Structure formats: structure tokens, C-alpha cells
Image (cartoon, rainbow, N blue to C red):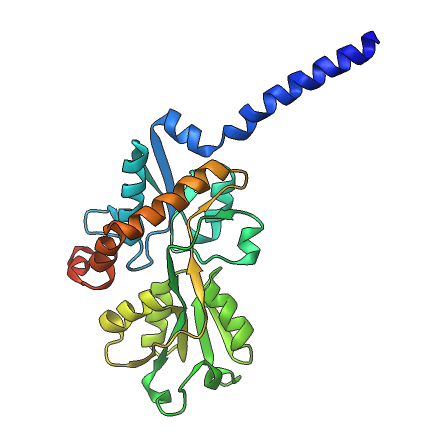
Length: 267
């Protein structure tokens, strides 16, 4: 009887400790610390970029500032290479990813996503010499074409899956891919529509044409570590608030419907 009583006592103590463990997610840590740490890779126009002063600006940055303000904490932006951004989140280098990341099943196995905050898709810039011959991604599905995208992105995945007959060329950055395309080293470059629309306007030099109808459906989401129900609840509810009080529209118009920010970028 005494043994049973001791076991029951130990069980009650364990159960009593569980709620504290469950509630102690990243949201509590951020509030205690007084700083929200956000990981992003500057270089994805207009989501996050580096301006002439070396500061990170963009659509995601303005959203992060609003989130930090709503939490009543300071914001710290952590510049991180794309291929290491998920491992860095998992090893607590920062609290969340806000970097134009597409929600995929593969990524969702490693990290948790808040509800999508914007939907984009893959589009294509093509060398002018292929005008008339290439009218969609399907026309590039031929071994005679060299098609590029950025390493570790859904653009790379889409190219390998849907344009798999072409010779695929991987690039470390979007800028390198566009430069090689303009210089004639590849035939086409696949990447997210928002970035490609800006790249076409700024960097095509009259040498490219733009297939601007997305051929994939890609929702972008903010990412946190698994086991952060309170944090996800906060992010989802605040996103709903932003989209219904005019805040989201204001930020969207600033970065997607205006090009006033372009002059702030590094040359």
C-alpha cells in the first residue's frame, strides 16, 4: 500500500509539472528576453534587401517590426545564408524565420509554419533569342536548354520536377543567376514572381523576355520551431488583425505597388 501511495504521489507531481513545460514556448522566452530575433537572408526583392547604409529593409522587415511592436519587445534581424536558415532556427540562433519561405511538406517536417501571409509562384526569364519558341515552362523541357535557379529553393525543386529534361544549373544567389542569363551563359532562369518582376524591370537590359504567369502555387509562411503552439497562435491572430485593420495593405503597397524603395538599394 505504501508503495502504491508513493507511486501515485510521484505521478501527481509529474502531472503537475507538465503544464509549465508545455506553456514555456518561444513566445515566453521572447517576452522575458525583451527581444524578438528574426532570421532572414537579405537579397530577395522586395521581401528583404540590404540598402546603401548596410541596413536590411523590405516587406518582411516591416512586418517583423510590427510583430515586435505588438509584442512590446525590440527587434533583432539575423542575416543568415539560405542553405543554413532552417538549421540555424533549429539550433536557436533566432526565434523565427521571416524570409519569403514557401510552405512545403518537406520543410513542415522540420519546422512549423504560421498561416500563409502571401501567395506567389514560379515565373521565368528567358533569353530573347528563344522568343516565339519558348512560350511556357513546358517548352524549356528539352536537353538543349540550360535552365537555372537558386540553390535550395522551390524554384530549384520546380525546375528539377517540371523541366527535368533541361540541363539544370544551380546558383548560390538570385543575382548570379540573372547575371549569367543576361550574359548568355544560360537560357532561362526560374524564380519567384515578385523578385523576377523587379529583376526584369531593372536588370534585363533588353536581352530577356518575361513569362510572368506563375506555373506553381506557393504560399509563403513564417516559420518557428515545433512545439510552439502559443507562438503560432499569436502570429496567426496578429496576421488576421493586420489584414483587417489596413496595416497589411499599407505595407504591401509600399513594397509591391511602388518602386520608391529602389533608390535606397546598394549599387
